[in-house]
Image (tube, rainbow, N blue to C red; front, top):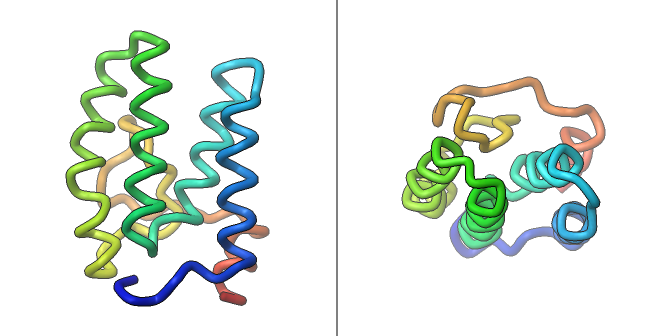
Length: 116
């Protein structure tokens, strides 16, 4: 959302998920935290893009070419999509999920975003 800062409670949750992803000991928990951070970040261009850059970094570490390519595409479209309000709510941001495919949102994240 252009000109609208990320509300403090959403920012705190986003940062917590990003830190949890960084500190996780295996790839599955890392992806799970990055996916949750992605859902939180979608309405804001920079956090959304930053999340996809973290996903790209993990894909590279895992040598997952398909995921890495998908993240490069998402990095390109993340900021404009967020700025224009054109993003699929609940989408986890992974390459195996369509760019425009809405997904069910975890209840805790939906509540947090709705309160913001």
